[in-house]
Length: 389
Image 1 (cartoon, rainbow, N blue to C red):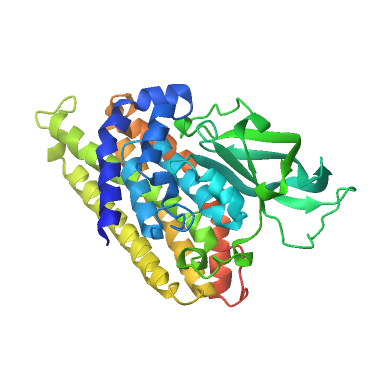
Image 2 (image 1 turned 180 degrees about the vertical axis):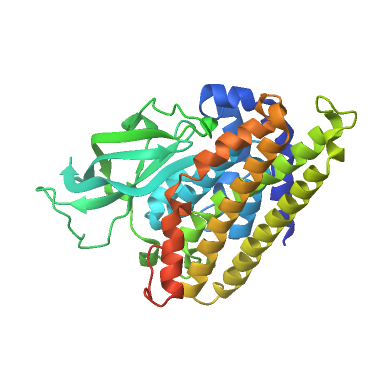
């Protein structure tokens, strides 16, 4: 643990009270208030995994996870925006250096993006400048309302719409300015309301070639540890960390309520009930065990990535541990929400917020049950590469 790592965790902790107090405002807006997004950007949360050579903080994945865990204890939506923003900015390394410099002129830049290749790019020269005509529709565009640069996964096509491979590099992403795309007002949801995860789409948007990213493997950064680290782990473990933060906050909330609440028909507080004693003990232990597994595996694999590429077994263990973390967090939050009775439904309690938020987080494809199916296939020796892990 470095001093910078701890300072970033402390910065996230310092935001918890404000995030808690403004939770209603965040949900009502259905996106982060811009001042809050900018405050988190100023603390460096959006550039955690970006190499120093580009202008980022070059932290290890555990720092991102710990920041997300800490923020989520107060507000899952804020943590989710940091998760998406930082992993989007992490891919700046796949852009031409000219565009990297343009984006990072503001070291507190807020970024957003969707990894799915839900768009197409067709090569087209305009006014003598090479570029691409982009069409696409991207879903779950978290934090897009706050961002200065919004990216989307693409695949290159020819004039007939057939997929092609570029003569220079395989194109993977396009970086838009917000005014170039249409952000839809369709984020009306039960949980993670403040993440602003609206769809956005591009209709015949021409962008210069300099704003098209290739794959990291085709760049000078390919041997950096952060780019050796399993890509899909970096895109999914923040979800586990976020649910972990919400689950820990839910246990703390029940402990607080139990000390104050005297159930109807009883003369003693809820804290004196043996059934509660057991449930709290079990929940705390399950959560601690899942957390320990996730972070210890991450540390082990991060050390391996300093000099080597991860194995399929590394990817299998890390992704499976993350799904286990999410499932454990859901179980804990559901139990905490239920065990204190009607107190959990009021907006004055964080239990209703974490209950809503965690059940939306579980719908993300990166922590779905197919991940465990892939992990099982690796364990059984049926799949020796498992590119989806």
